[in-house]
Length: 512
Image 1 (cartoon, rainbow, N blue to C red):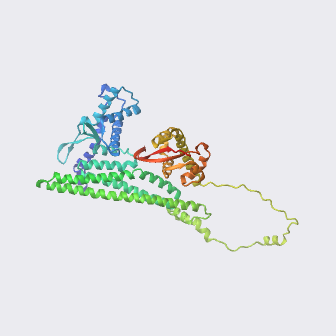
Image 2: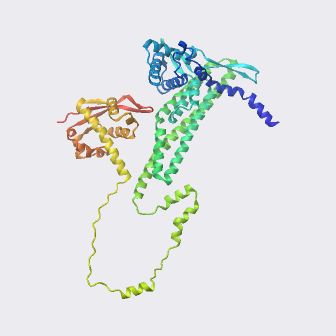
Image 3: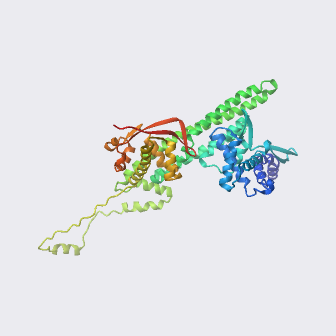
């Protein structure tokens, strides 16, 4: 009987919740079902509406969340026109392309009407119509602008196509939409998902620390990967947390204004309870996020100390008992301890000679002439350690970047970081912006406001100058040059997704 009760409960009581979860997929499959076969007698049947829909949702997430602005139709038209040319090799006249993009956009937003999803509710014993939109609109000034809805974001999240480092940012956007729609209970679930992502990063940090304990150089690689993952969204997340907290306060004030009559007191109490519960969850998430930032910085310091200590220990001609012990514990194979314990238990301190050896010693006659032993001169072997090889590589990369900067200054007298990036991309390829040495170069370069090459050759004040001095000395035409660096804090440059740097202006200085 109990099993039958559970079966009936899952079929009837949980059916509505399951159908509400399934409805977010309905617009996608409806759009995929013959969208282009109905347009101009199937002329554009080669286009994939599924890909176009997901690409459009990702475009709106980028603009609405990361750029914090709504989108007008001309902006969407530029995006979609580029997609059709790039991915489908579709070259059309301007008017024909605009007409096609308008048709696509009307389909995705369903001509401004919600999609209707109908299902049977066995609990209420009637058919229910549920409505949802992927894209919604509003009038801003004299222009109609568009934004993605919470249903559109939830659907895109379920497709698992977002990058790992973007998960928390997307969840924060979903939370913002939930608050605006007054779905505070749904917002609490979103904040808990954010907390789960932060908890996962905390667990990863513990694994990195453990790995540093028994294999420091492997742990260093894991630490670098971890810092790259979490560092890409730290600065943006705090802004989004603050913004959502302000939205909660605004929702609390609005609830007090909306429910002022005596009849609405029950609704007011329930609404305020949901809002306060959401605020508590968000405060908890902010504290966990701040603690993770602090611990990540401490992890980097600990990792640097352990790596430095390990490099020194590698130079000692001794057996590392602690390191070996940690490895064996990690392998969980106690029998391996015998390999270095047994030799210590079998030490033979007594030295003896056989009778034959004693006879040989007594009867041994040395030669009359003592000849000197010829000593062969052995070649000196120079060892190059891994950190020395790494320093040499970084120094060479720094010089190549500095060479391009000085070469351009000798021609243009002045340029900014955007121009320099464009020149470097042409010469070294787009992968330059994915190379950590480039960002390290910018950080070291910005330590001083001006550089005089002849002074660098005489004395190196910074680590950066020490790395490039040797190679700069070989390039005679740069010896009389000097340049200044000015930070343009009003302008930020997007080097690649999630990476922003302040613009820098480089100016050639006159030398007397």
